[in-house]
Length: 144
Image (tube, rainbow, N blue to C red; front, side):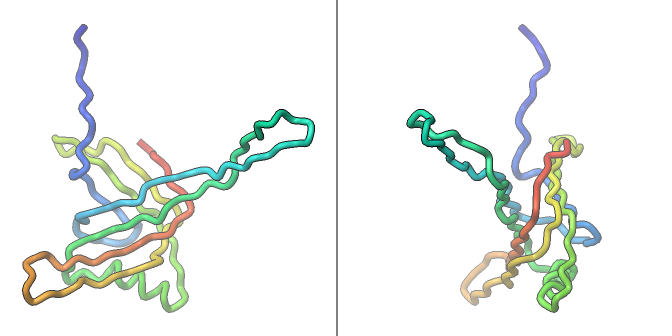
């Protein structure tokens, strides 16, 4: 049996697009998950096992990490939120194949910054200064 081989996508080949923000690459994107609450329900004349009903959908916050540069776009988005102007944006994460083609995308809907961390500095270290942004959101879709 012969056929075309479908290798899984590599987790280190991706790019992130934040609506209206130009930002260089991110070294880590994490937190993609969705879950449904389970509501157990039983009436008095039911068998001893309760029914399980779907409840609210919940999404974890998305975390972005990147090496600090002179780009201020994401930080300015955080500052606007801190100052009371919550601007929700669509964030798209795109997996890239070995040839550089877009092969899978996930859209994070109605995202806004809920936490920002500036880099840690250490005179004895040799690591890259990394900024951290956590995004709250209201949904996630795989669009391709």
